[in-house]
Amino acid sequence: MSKIPSTPPGGKGYASSPCMAEETGLYDPQAAAARHAADVARWRKAARSRLRAERLATTVAARQAAGDALSGHLRQLLKSRSGGADGQVISFYWPIKGEPDLRPLMAELHAEGATIALPIVETKAAPLVFRLWTPETRLVRGDWNIPVPPPSAPALTPATVLAPLVGWAPGGYRLGYGGGYFDRTLAALTPRPYAIGIGLDAAQLPTILPQPHDIPLDVIMTETGEQFANTAS
Ligand SMILES: Nc1nc2c(c(=O)[nH]1)N(C=O)[C@@H](CNc1ccc(C(=O)N[C@@H](CCC(=O)O)C(=O)O)cc1)CN2
Ligand SMILES: Nc1ncnc2c1ncn2[C@@H]1O[C@H](COP(=O)(O)OP(=O)(O)OP(=O)(O)O)[C@@H](O)[C@H]1O
Image (tube, rainbow, N blue to C red; front, side):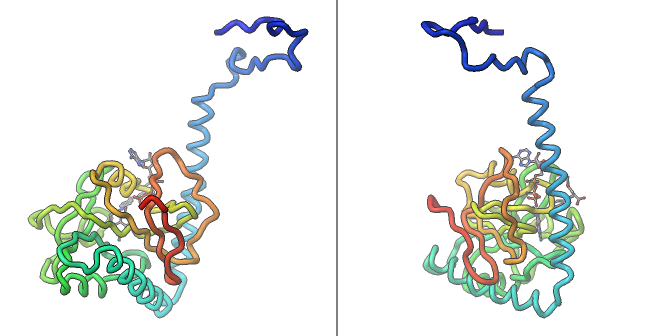
């Protein structure tokens, strides 16, 4: 504990008495941070279930229209970045739980020469693995029953990753299903892939209460176009 002089050097007295909170043992900054993290996790859990329920409550036709609109914006963005899809490894996702369905665009880019990958949870609480998808790939059931390429499909490192969003906030922040998989993956991959969040306008939140592990995405795309782009990318 550092000693605080009772009078400041050359002065009469302090304007207020020193804060003794740490000395009392009642204030432990680490415990306070842990309590805050637990509050955030609880808040996120509630936000996820509300947003997931709202998404599933929309009509199939509305979801399909959103998927088609998103595909159009995404096609433009990918083409402007690569000048044509040839050879680029792009990770898509197999839609679950009312996520926008981009599979027609996935097949179209494959036909144009792009290399398509799908993400797989091969190890719990570890980065995702990406494996090759082609229209001939016979998908198998992975973690959470998500259809994934079989272990025999080649593993790839994507240059571009599409990350489906349960919720999103300005700054490129993503709320997913709560496994932390995309954050772990973006933290592990070098070079870092260009990460595009895919979500709906209705899933915007004022904030996701960002935590140290949350890695902002490069762009957030919704059915009405690009909502946010990090300038450094
Ligand atoms: N279509 C699609 N595929 C995807 C993703 C996605 O978001 N969408 N992922 C994107 O990352 C990965 C799978 N993400 C997963 C995220 C969470 C859990 C999971 O078990 N969640 C627990 C809750 C965890 C917690 O709150 O601590 C659960 O719901 O029981 C499983 C897979 C890879 N594939
Ligand atoms: N880079 C990391 N290293 C270790 N743990 C991490 C990392 N990133 C996230 N986590 C852990 O994962 C948990 C869930 O994170 P978060 O709430 O951000 O999930 P999410 O982004 O919604 O999930 P997902 O990406 O799977 O859809 C956090 O409590 C955190 O402890």
